[in-house]
Length: 295
Image (cartoon, rainbow, N blue to C red; front, side, top):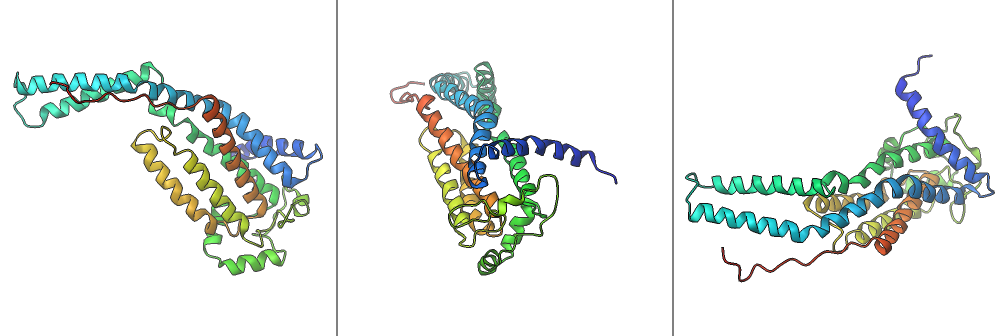
């Protein structure tokens, strides 16, 4: 039977997180506690240290350069007004303004490159998404769910809430169970509280909306003054708010175990952000006043 190289690579990528979860589970924890513990470990080792912390230090340098950026902008614009009004250098209307904007952009790129705070470094946390996908796929394989994550979301979108509740209360799975090397049947008996079976959707539909609430809380905490830098980050925040609001209804059919990991991962992110705010806070320098400046 032919196996594509991509499938082999995926199997290899899932082996490590599966081994980590089995190791934590072997310490005597049930799966209901193993999943949050693993989410915290992965967040600390694979996200916080290589991505979140360097990105926060980059943001600190970026904000500290505000007075320098402002001074250079004022100097460039003073030279622009001198060339336009006194030297009458530009004959075509708007040509001088275009040259000014290009000059400011080049100067800004050079400044950010010198201090290692370009847009790429500031967006390092975006690279954590593949790690989350690998973990989610690992748990999906452990739950024995046939559909992928996108397939489960589509099924939730096309399934009425009352049907999702009926499926969970009858003990039915979110999708046909498939066998495999990652399958963990004990997930069906090692839940907690109102969701003792982690292989089926939450019968009360509470977990999807808990996830939505936690995601919104994380977004708003990260949107405090000084944390949203630039238009791109502002637009990204608005998109994430829409996603967080929609995530509850879209995850009705997701197994409780997968939702538990998602909630745990987002909560771990909030904890890591609190640590960053305590030990590496973002401080926005004051901007100089333009009043009294003679061009």
